Image (tube, rainbow, N blue to C red; front, side):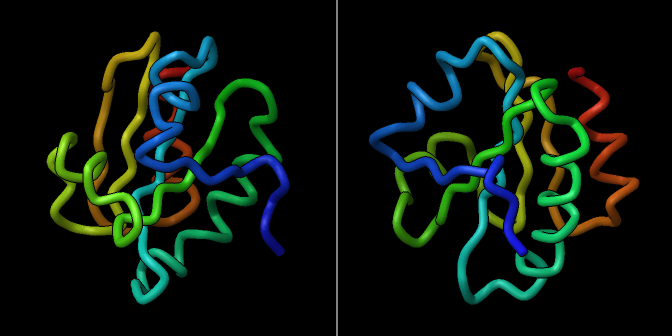
Length: 109
């Protein structure tokens, strides 16, 4: 079941959703056809519930929002980007376990 704490962002809303956020943001660059993207989705859902207000998690479909993916050099998916204070703080390419993603998030929270 998808967490109601994870929202979708787009090329049009990225600045407002991510760059202007007062809370650190994890952006999941994904696509519907991507198996590894689907595999990490339950981990992101669980972490969104577990971490509550410590971090905001948003998803960006690269097929529908290519400009943002190109701007941040996303060439493989899944790619997770962490933003803090409106700046890119860390990057993780490829899938991973819930623990690996949690450790990645802890670099900014």
